[in-house]
Length: 272
Image (cartoon, rainbow, N blue to C red; front, side, top):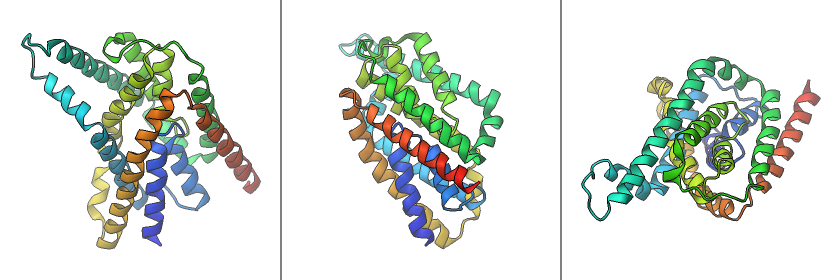
């Protein structure tokens, strides 16, 4: 049963981490309705699941990541100088956005953590995610390339990612939508959001890594299978989402968020 639960939760994590529907919100609601607490070993499970989705984005964007790293070591004015210069600017913007997200966590992290135990709040936040995602499809003028987005846009996107630490607010949905609101090209907005998720996922789990040291053999196997499910489903989802963003079809996820929000609120209040 533990293996099945870990795999199911891995699929939930992988399918929702990159889709604009809030993976943290789904995990909170999933654990609430299935009477699973988010303490103890479940924290270890969540670390494994996040590792699975982290690996998915790294593998999917491996060429982009290698190009960005390579540009840090090419400063001579060769034929590829402009390309490397643009890549270095992208790295600067990623650092700025990550720094701004970190500020939000330092200031409000402890308060944000308390709402993970409030499924009703999470369900309400899902409806807000629906609004954010729905409005992003209405933005048509997105012509700014990623390398030319500028410091102010990277700050705004980073702050948006910080707000998305609230369970029920989609990280990918918020960062992609914010980039689109700022006029960034659709494909570049998605690319930036996915690359930005790498330090975000790492930072979110580094402080909890120590809890996995006491895992037993059977539990460890379950969690590894959960991470594998998160990796596979997450990898597949990234490609699908990229196509939907280009086609301005994120609004369908807004309808989904509203449906889950209304359903969850109804069930929670009914059980009260």
